[in-house]
Length: 216
Image 1 (cartoon, one colour):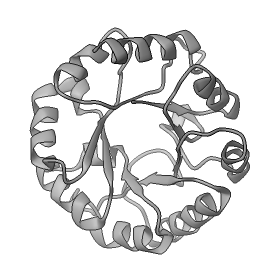
Image 2 (cartoon, rainbow, N blue to C red):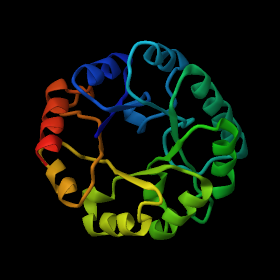
Image 3 (cartoon, rainbow, N blue to C red):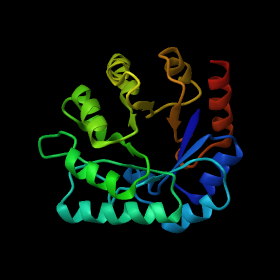
Image 4 (spheres, rainbow, N blue to C red):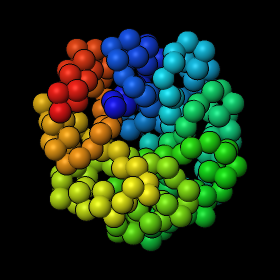
């Protein structure tokens, strides 16, 4: 299954048209993705028929948030849910670079829909412990870019998860290397399908990723 991360509403529609199986909806590629306008999620929910994962992130930069930012994230989570998101993707860390389980768990319990831990996971001091913390917080899936620089660690994370939580590899995944993840046993991957400095979803690349996944 191919999840496409799109940073423009038009790109969301293009990703669906070219065959994406799930959409991560956000904006501001230059900031690594932040909460999208609720109008985007509402429009997509009423016009496409694949799962929508809405980003909940108040700003770019690090994942250590103030109490005010956590409150903002809680409000955004509810707004994204009401707009029609099937799932949310968010996360945050403590000053000691551990997952902030308490605050993440509070948002997950408040919204009552599946939630995904985004790449805040990749800055944790101990990603193996992070798997346990993500499970304890109530996340259903972890998005991680470890496969890009440390495939052995990604495989260790997958073993640690042991089916208790889904591991979704992302970060630099393109049709040229997606087979590496298939060989590791992953059946779903995450990609922005961006090929140039236009920073827009490339429909041909979406199709190439799907072809590679289907032949894998």
